[in-house]
Length: 462
Ligand code: SF4
Image (cartoon, protein in one colour):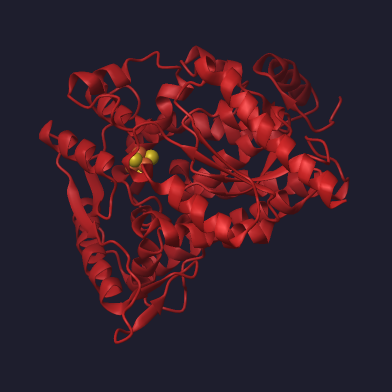
């Protein structure tokens, strides 16, 4: 069997899967050939190139089998909590209770891409008055109405306040359709005034202590709602244990990011790294399995690093990527152009930072929620991006905008200005819709131009 690390198509994966099975591959219950997901409607897989390792196979199968897992949880007597918008905090609380399973309906964001707009989710959102002037997260409205993409949760929780206009409007529309929501408020994070006590948050931002206290009181309301729904007391001891388990995932991801983004040649494609990072926000509905999946990926990366092998040429241009892409294929396009991702801010950095364990658990969770890069200013977010660009040695920055997204109308300009003032690297701003096929030649050309600019700089610097 040829075990050379490389990216392969879905058709090649069929052959690869047969080889791995013949060689004795053991799989978890959700395992199987990737091609079966196309039969379930995940058509975009046919246009992607994926890593050829058994670890990547497990990652993809885990990611694509979440709906089945949620149905199985219900059959086992567990209760579902739909957590919306905070991306990484309320699920830690929910998973601290033994009979709750949290997931993000916001994840419907990727359905138009993965299912190649074949299920009418966006059309349903259109019919409800939420048209394409909104970001693709509007697909969640279609998913709730059609009830075909995930089972309906018995409790829906959503953060408001420092939340983008798109999500506020969409969640309010959802509630108007008869889906009750427990709202909790997160304020816009501001820098402390000189006379205020400043609290350092995970990741390094500062916030005034009264904002932390306010978020803690809001999360206390969520805690009480989770207790009432679950029928179990959410004690500090349970919360601390839940924080410990979340930190296990965060620590594995931190190690994975450090090794993949710093190694040369690149040991794991940006597409698989993007999916892996997303596991941090709610563990894809199975915390233990997330740990297994990430551990196997890390082992594979370690093997490749030790063997000095990778999936891209050693001179691939090191790019820092801002914002998740609505079309997963965009990550393949960067690598086709001669680039690789070395650092990313996919709007979930606060879900990757370790949650403090030397504080009372609700205080620690409040600080984590306020550390969200999306609840502060774009300038703050840019500072964090600058620090990570330096840490991972990126040579270029791509700011990938999301069509219709209100959070980033001017954000790219602000981030670009801050980065430009501090670091001398070329910056490219692009927009990535859920399906890039129609604009692929333009996207390719722009990414190739960025890569060529960096290569020219390298030649001059030599
Ligand atoms: S506008 Fe931005 S932050 Fe809001 S839901 Fe869309 S992608 Fe997320």
